[in-house]
Length: 318
Image (cartoon, rainbow, N blue to C red; front, side, top):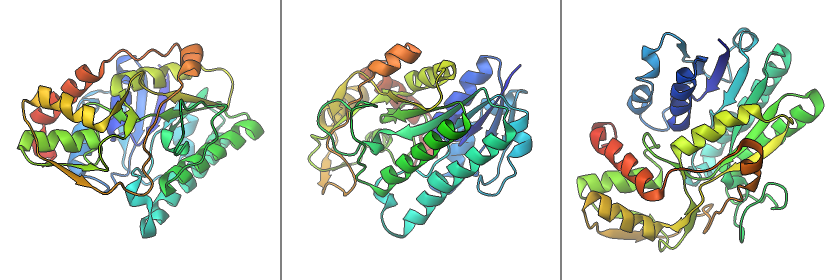
């Protein structure tokens, strides 16, 4: 039985990944510091199933302080998902947290991974935010990265750290640029979960901008399948887009949610925030080629699954 380490294991993506890897008969060591970016109750609930499994162990420590060497030396795979999320909150004095969690922690993890010399594969979670505002499909090789938020800047810096460690020390790193992941357990600050909770409570929904901004939304199960498949990527330093096959506007999302919730919400429009982008669209041809990636979940089904989950667990979100 091989051992994997997952940083940020109590988060939205981390908890789903841990469950799937346990099902695939891996031993999972999860590390999470339970920061106060959102409710710790939600994060603990995310791990409810994992904690029932004898092959799962949880370490509650800050990655900037913990001695990772003994953990890494007994592990064969590393999924680095821990990060400080959020585009809008990355401006101003909070930027220090983004530098610490997204850049300094990544560099520290890479140093320990180099010293441990035990990993067959290291998967680093990145973000479509590294692209910034672009026309057309965003391609890993041909699209210039020009983030428009401090958050995006720190994720690009983390990518570059991974690249130079792969080039100089041959660390077996693959970087995944996730495009707007949604589904059950999505963070409460993210758009779909905000819209859903307001619909459940029959309260007005706030949209930033006019609602015509479009996103490449990606369902959590598709993201997890792609992340696990990335363990088979051979060349170190590869960057791969992980996105859905449909690009859709926020206004269209609201119309789909109306059908699912059977509720016609009042919409409150607020100014478009600095650092957000008007459109994202992933070129996933590389993901199809390298990891046989094919998104399976339709937007309607994915949104329905998330709505059902949120309604069942609404006490964690209100």
